[in-house]
Image (cartoon, rainbow, N blue to C red; front, side):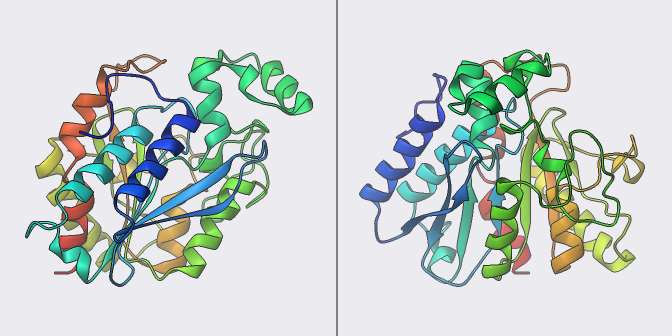
Length: 291
């Protein structure tokens, strides 16, 4: 495997791995920046395939959930290595987008501490929140990106910011407006479960969501969350999947990796286990979207 899942990767290491993959597979991989974080890190999107827009795989929205980003890059590497197989041949007609780390500032904080933030005011503010760096899920302005999107159940809180106030959420919004994608999976941690129900969407939409989530549950062994768990605390609106489903009326799932009882910082040893469970998810999601 081109990606070492037995070590912890900084954001720069993840970017280096993406660039190396592009250099090795330039005919099937395209890498672009879709924006910059508040601390000046590029937010990269990788397009795998030669055809029409397919689904988008999103990771690293919460800084402390540091398992999924490198696992998504490892899945990219696997698909590149297997591209000529029948399994991957659908990518001649379609593509899959990967945005492994939407919140690179938060990710680097959770990997190496608040010293990763170069802007002194931002660094001091993050430290003033008195959250241990390895449990820090926000961006460099102390905002939870996954509460910053426009949706019907958005609730303004201290950490939500105003709708689309953050570079990171704006970058994803702009990406979605510029690409006619087929669906979204946003990978989070923890729970080993899949959120599919959208209370603001019609029954027909949720029926398809249930079908897709069930197919992916069969692959991963993850459970399906109950509809009432969608926004059980009343302030979990304004997330990526709510925005995507309500704006584009296309499938949008949240997959929670690693066990519910896993403690932060998430152990590096979990990367290999998560990889084995979700490695087929992006391709199978595309396959079932086409049916």
